[in-house]
Image (cartoon, rainbow, N blue to C red; front, side):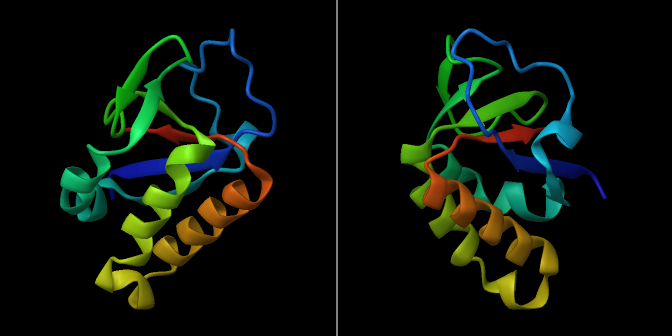
Length: 115
């Protein structure tokens, strides 16, 4: 499995470059990148994000890097995950949906580590 990892940032540092690979700091969960992100890509392109730091606004996910997903983009991301017909058969997706909901509830940024 080529994995994409998602976690929640407790407190975003507007000056920090998040390029370092630190999934343990954000309690990341993994999903199969090829299995899901390719299918979600058209919808992900509509989502406002940042690549590596808040100085680099972008859209979608950095497939080979680090993405910061702001709180205002999380409902769209949650809808993408929840609308995937495979959610009832894959604990990875359920875990991701729960992680997104926790970030929404606490108005926190999420972090994504690409392949």
